[in-house]
Amino acid sequence: MTVSTTLTAHLDTFARDRLPPAELQPEFIFELPQLRYPERINCASELLDRAVLAHGWGERTAIHGAAGDLTYAELLATANRIARVLTEDMGLVPGNRVLLRAPNNAMLAACWFAVIKAGGIVVTTMPLLRAKELTDVIVKAQISHALCDARLAEELEIARGACPTLMRLSYFNGDAATQELDSLEQRMAAKSASFADIDTARDDICLIAFTSGTTGKPKGTMHFHRDVMAICDCFPQSTLKLEAGDIVCGTPPLAFTFGLGGMLLFPLRVGAATVLVEKLTPDLLLQTVQDRKVTVLFTAPTFYRMMAGQAGQFDTASLRKCVSAGEALPVATRQLWQEATGIRIIDGIGATELLHIFISHTEDEVRPGATGKPIPGYRACILDADGKPLPAGSVGRLAVKGPTGCRYLDDSRQAAYVSDGWNITGDAYLMDADGYFFYQARTDDMIVSAGYNIGGPEVEDCLLAHPAVAECGVVGVPDAERGQVVKAFVALKAGYNPDAAMARALQDHVKNILAPYKYPRLIEFRSAMPRTETGKLQRFRLRA
Ligand code: 3UK
Image (cartoon, rainbow, N blue to C red; front, side):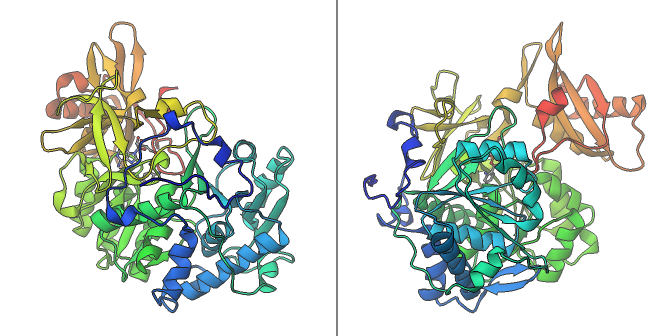
């Protein structure tokens, strides 16, 4: 497929002008016939207008929200009204960047479609970001407009002072009952429910997702309309097998592309419904599964682990499929969830740079400890430090290519992520003789102790299988004699004592299961592990 680069609909070419140079772009593969999209496509028209006008799904429920349910037709009308506010009142021009800020709710979903209908570029931000972090994002992407949940106004108002490009701002009230004067809702009420979507090119940028990086300035990953369509037409079709009757729910924010795909785009692509809940705890998610008869769950491994203990108190019979991503799924967690619900979790590795999941497996192909195989449409291999492919059984750098890939916004770190057309995710992996991919650690997190390479997650898996352990994190700490030694941070379940005898018991437990050189020489008890908003263990904070 030749990808046109001339017919852009963007009048503001800021983002387009800052795409990585051709030699630093990943190679894209469009082997699957469903990924050969027409030259002009607007992913919002495709997912929303076509759902109502072509498929006739207007009366179906698209979103179950706290303030009530929205049908596909209602979601379309709401998005159209917001698109009119953006273009008629707020001066949005195709190619402008628009910041969205809200917990997972129906207004956030409608705003997402509205921006893309109007030819804008969506930058959804995590609800917990503070003014400093918002400023970094706004300045980096030269954001001109913002649509923000009124309850999250404070930090954005502080950021605004340092952000001269951010000229037009409108607040909405989300699922809250109160309606402010001159809110986005008020402005929308005056608008017609129809809107002519901008006729964008398939390779026009429609979203910039910032990575939840642990160090350095956040990186903006840029994605095209065709990339959004591609993630809808890969994992959910070949692996998850999402269906029109499904009701999905889960924890990842829509600002995290795991959540954007799973909790919004994938269900809309097939005529299914999503349950958007603003704040979820393990028992609230279980309660929601019971109340809403949820069939498909998306969340991170720690959430499955926490829910497993309580699942018996709820009716989870409606559940059909459970997807885990964000970090490695421990074998012990997979087992606990299967014992509690009878469901085999579908593990999948995705990345913001690749937009969504690229290695995964169906429930019938579970291989404990493995993430799976490249999903149809993607290829993966293991490379050595020089970029040469390694044979099966060797640990090396995971390299991936497919219909999506890394395009950082004006960032010298592009050269570290893309090499020779491959996306290098920063993960150490091993492929076995059958082609299954086994996660070892983040490349930077591999522990090297007395010449042995040790992946922290393997030791964590082992500790999690001990009945006293609630949560844990394993890192390497400097050691004069061995270079590094393995150190485990452990949070115990209620009723267990964090004492020397417990530490010894845990060490013996690991020595009984793994090669003895992997056992944690140091153990420190903590009440909980430091985690990101997306559920990832922050190993750098444990090392500090
Ligand atoms: C790690 C995993 C082992 C891995 C994401 C699904 O996590 C997502 O994106 P991020 O940019 O992080 C990417 C990195 O996270 N990781 C993710 N999933 C797994 N490690 N097993 C897994 N199943 O280090 C990867 O490089 O935050 C996940 C969909 C969309 C996403 N953006």
